[in-house]
Image 1: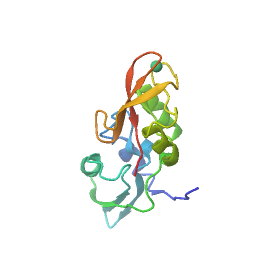
Image 2: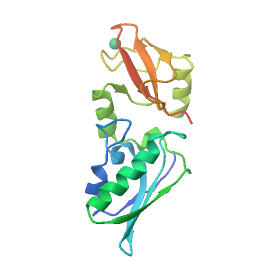
Image 3: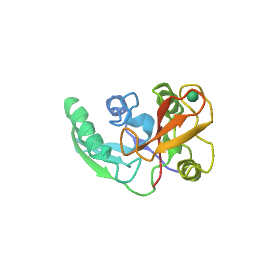
Length: 166
Ligand SMILES: [Zn+2]
């Protein structure tokens, strides 16, 4: 288990919680667990974020969105990208996972299971429509580069899977 400490100034919490993940508008960046720290020093907010998926184009957008939200609340800010330790799906809050599924995106598995699911070796990804595990990978790339497209063998519905391949 990776131990990661989050240092978020409670004052900044509600502001950051308003910033949604550009990939998944129903999720805030706090629920996705991408914010490692946010502290105020000399009236400047320093925010450290960790990308959910290396090379994810959404990360630039998240940085800009955080800056905009903080500016709106009256803060100058600096965004720093932290690549180590790497983001893990364990950082998604239970509320975040629920929101993902409600939104019709299968929540990511852990990294090892993720690989097996994407290589098609095992039936691990649950259909967001009917809950069946009889699903198969249609494309490594779904609606965005960070998602893979799956299709359910039971109800025939296609759905996105939020992958966590590094
Ligand atoms: Zn289904």
